[in-house]
Amino acid sequence: MPTINLNGFLGANQFTSTFNPAQANSWFGHSNISLVVKLPILIGEDRNRMHQQFKMQEIQLGMQVIDKQEQFAQETAIANLKISNLETQAKTLK
Image (cartoon, rainbow, N blue to C red; front, top):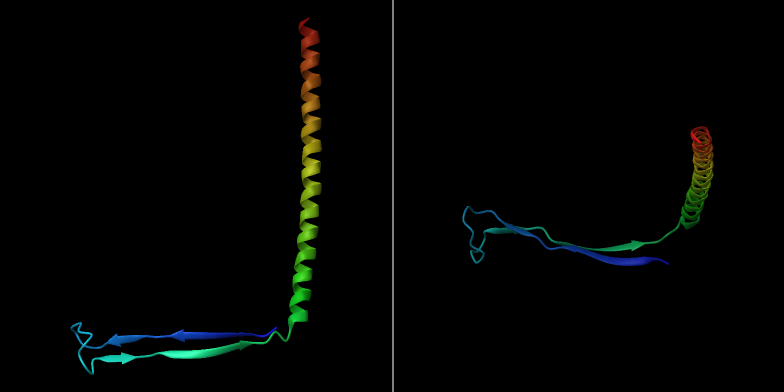
């Protein structure tokens, strides 16, 4: 779908050393109004780019999941080793 916008700028400035808005011939201005029409001609390329970005994001999130799983497995193994160490120390103290 094409989109149509009106953009405008209303501006003026006083070029005298004293501020008097009612003084004649002391203002200069630059104002404009523009009509902007956007027609999405290359929407297919944009969709392909977004599809590729989502694919990359999917791959990255999958890798993050694998990393977290490996991290939790390592932390579990370390915790099990600490538990077995503590059990051994408890048996030694008895």
